[in-house]
Image (cartoon, rainbow, N blue to C red; front, top):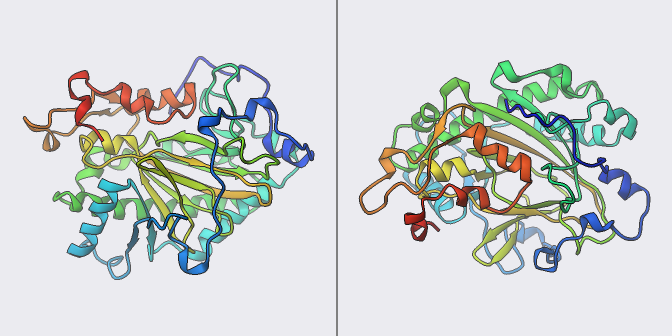
Length: 373
C-alpha cells in the first residue's frame, strides 16, 4: 500500500453531490474544463444499438458462455480477445459467471451509501496518504481543475491490506456484499487473465506469475456522478489510462457516461445489461511492450440523472519491478519502457491526478518512441 508524507489535501474538499443538490444554476470555475477538453453530448441509444456509438462504431464484446467450467478457450474466442486488446484496449464481457443478483445488490448498496447525509459519509473522509475512504478529488496539486464526482476507495487484496472496519457500516449489508463481490470478481479476473495469456500464445498462468501470484493487488472504487447543471463544461472523470493491469467496471445500467478514445474520436460505451466493461491498464502495455495497450477514457455527466459505477482494479504486487517481458523484446522491437515498481508508478496519478497517458509516455525510452501506438 502506498504511503506518503502528504496527510491532508492542499485545499478544502468540495463535495460534488452537495453542490449538485444545492440547486446551483452554474458550476464553480474550479470544475470548468478548457474548451479543447469539453465533452460532446451523449447520444440517445435505441435498444438494438446498445453496443454502438452515434457513429456506428462497435465496442468489442467477449462472450464467455460455454467456457466458464473449462480452462480452455476456443480459437475464435482467443482471436476476439486478441483483437480487442490490440485495437481497443476495452471490451464488454457477457456470460461471465458472476452472479447478476450480487452485481445488482452491490451497486445498489453503494447507491444507498451515497444517498446518506453528508455528515454520515464524512466519517469515512479520506486523505492522500492512502486514498482509502470517501473522497472527491484525485491529485494534490493546488488549483487543479476538479472533476464532477465523488467516490469511495478501498483495498481488497492482498488480505494484509484489507481493512473492513474502514468500509461503510451503512447500509448494513455493505461490508458483506463487498467481500462477496470482491471474491467473485477476483475469480473472473483470474479466468480472463488466463485467456489473455493464451491469446498471446502463452500458458494460462503466465501473467498471474509475472504479476505476483497470490500477492496481487486489488482495489475497489465506487463512483458517484451527480446531476450537473452544465454538463457541457465539465467531466465526471478526466481523460486518463488506468495505472494497473486490468479494470472491471460495473456500470450504471440506466445511464451512459464512459467514453473511450478510438483514434481521434470519443466512443460512448452503452452498457450491455449485466456485462462488465473491461479495460487494460498501463502495466499490461508495459509488460507486452505495447503489443496490447491501455487506452485513454473519460466520464461525461448529464443534467437529468445521477450515475453510480463500481471499478475493480486488478494490479501487480506493489513492490514488483515492471518492465517489458523478454518474450516481447526483439532486435526489431527493443524494450520501449524503463523499469519501475507499480507502487512508484501509481504515485504519479495520485499526486498529479488523471492526465491522459503522460505517465506511461514518461517511461518511454527516447530511442523507441516512434514504435509505440
